Image (cartoon, one colour):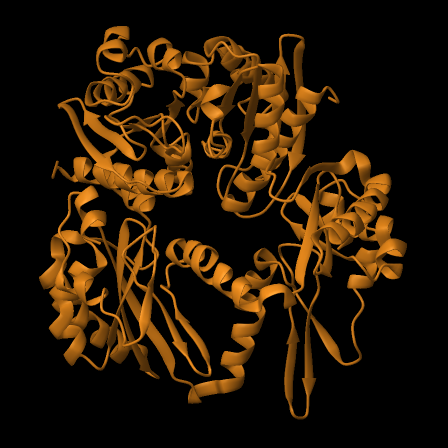
Length: 317
Length: 317
């Protein structure tokens, strides 16, 4: 604990030292992420774990100290749950339910479950086994069935994110990426830079919130803003090519829309957005309408923009 | 439901229509955020609510349809819990516990509880009452006690966020803001644009991930990058003044650091970051060291940068 504080140039207080106390017979669990204590207390009737509350400290400690202890205590007796999750886009949960209805109805092992979150559906296959290889073979067979029905909609597996999938594609091609954002306000760039190593392909982003920045930094012609407005196909296209040029990147993606709650009109309501993607061969723009809260709007538009970028890189738009 | 789909240019499926079925005697609850049904079923022994699972649909329905129903059913009998939460910065949880120890120990109504999250501590005061005015008076008296001890660390109340507090300060002053980000990768701009109406004061942001963008768009001199590196006080200062000038803003804030997991050296380890804030009178830079995951690093540095910006606007740094 003294080292943890020293590394941050701070001095521990009495409360910090009290946290280091141990009950009789208790053992410390290593906390790699903070100062809150973790304790394992073995007793003739069982074992008690006391873990810190903050999730950033609780989760690593559970994974590093509790799970290995329990697995060892269970020995060879334990069955484990093995899962594989396919990640889908451009399709809704009820559509997936209809397409997979007969498989889900007849299948008992692995089981298949659908999960929907904004702009994404997941198909989770799960099986219990003591033998990992047998479990993986069963999962692979079911995965094949599902992929035959939904192939073009499957973009990733398990912990993939759209931004990690894009990172892999760009690395494979040795290509670079630039972003121009209006309504998503930096969230798109933030997700792209959530990927470790993204500095290998990500050049940067211009959040052009004010129209003057769209002109000054991205070179969007004033005539476009006057004739079509900032929320238009023409502006999205100019933002894509402007940021590609200003940041000297191979690929670019741009968003411009109305996040709300204010700023909507009858012709251009809150939730309207234009998303553009482009490379040296040209620019492709699509429009969407996602009414909802500001946070939902930013999150959905970001996911849509990443997906459109992914499709541009693999050459399907 | 037909209108919800029509607004999005999509066609409902059989599954969507099955969702609209109602049990005998049940009443529909309005779902303003999706198609999943909510049902209220009154029975002689009580009332059953069935709500959709996705939090974005569950929460608004609970607030709009369930709480008002329960309050009306309870009539005048019900006591409510009233709370007020003070938001603190630049101080750790154990320090706050030491400073408020005697008050927390002696106080029974309102109760006082501390909550810590990365780079923020909250002091929550709570009291139960049937009479709102009595509750508010008790909370105000306790708030005064706490503020006397912690005044300079209190920056907000209840649902304030650092970005909403900054928005209020900028609006009061009629001032504008620009952001330059390296290691936070767009998260800082994204938080600033989470505030409805932020387009009134937010000019935009340059995420200069690649050094070439720092030079091309922000005008950071190549000599600084060669002599001191991108993660340096000098670079942070040049980014602040560069983005203020490029985006023509009154205030600017900049981040440059090493988010990890790669890219660290002995002299400049993962977690090192320089944060700069500035206006026409000059630039102020501070450095911090926050080892942790990439996500924790981005989140903490963003909070630190917003806090430093807040202190610059109110004139304390």
